[in-house]
Image 1 (tube, rainbow, N blue to C red):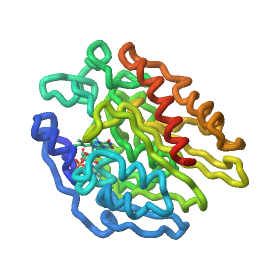
Image 2 (image 1 turned 30 degrees about the vertical axis):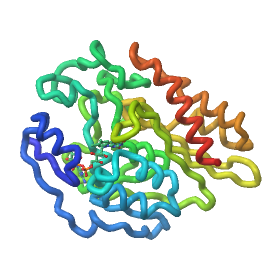
Image 3 (image 1 turned 60 degrees about the vertical axis):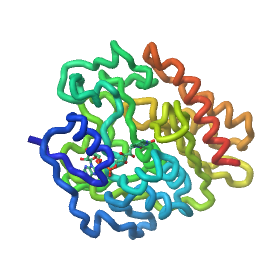
Image 4 (image 1 turned 45 degrees about the horizontal axis):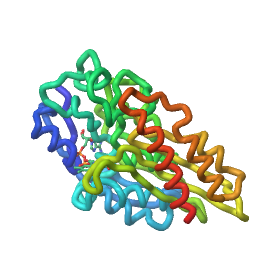
Length: 295
Ligand SMILES: Cc1cc2nc3c(=O)[nH]c(=O)nc-3n(C[C@H](O)[C@H](O)[C@H](O)COP(=O)(O)OP(=O)(O)OC[C@H]3O[C@@H](n4cnc5c(N)ncnc54)[C@H](O)[C@@H]3O)c2cc1C
């Protein structure tokens, strides 16, 4: 039987209590490599998997502003103080069919996705696979925007995007299997980078976003020379938005340019019947995050 690892326990405990997680549990031993934040030889930073989300926010505030904003903006202060960067990336999805102990679904070993024919109003805007749950990790979207690497004990260093896959695997929330995620590595900081995080939620406090966006932008001599924009809450995996990025680079950061780029955020979306509203929501969320990054 699969042993489930416990870091901060904020996601796992809820699934234990509800009876969705029933197998054996093992606490992750807090050895130095998992709790440290240290510079890498290449000029970046390595963050141990057990570093809490609020410590991530503080540690990267100066050099990785979009990641800092995302870490400081997710969940609640209590969760950020206990939840870890590793646990945030590997937390399970929030679909109510998955979270209900009496309901079968693909991610619990079942044969189909009950949300697809049922109530999927918080589901995907980008329908990429048989399961219609969105990926819940805010830090996943932020780290995707930074092209972070994830270190594991089983398969070494892998790009953050490979941790999640392309969204077509309806059976898993991530692709690490039973590997231990040991650390996250960020490339060297980019001088002058501006960053922001913005989310649209259905209630003001203690809620996962309906849509969220992270933006990193570098402006030199009045022109945008680099842009990385990622979205969460809209697909089975965190997504980079290449059309938005391409519409920014090489142009002046005017309100019209930001609005035009933001309008492309949902260009290749294929919503479900109940998630059409997320298209406009994502466009507004991305436009807002671009404005905040440059304000
Ligand atoms: C009210 C509320 C609002 C929230 N809003 C958001 C939000 O907006 N955005 C967001 O991203 N999250 C949100 N969360 C979720 C929260 O961020 C996660 O519960 C937390 O980050 C999980 O971290 P943890 O260390 O407690 O993980 P745990 O609960 O310990 O583990 C979660 C899962 O990851 C696995 N795991 C953990 N660490 C490792 C590791 N190092 N290697 C291998 N497997 C591992 C565990 O086996 C488990 O399956 C919210 C939670 C609450 C309660």
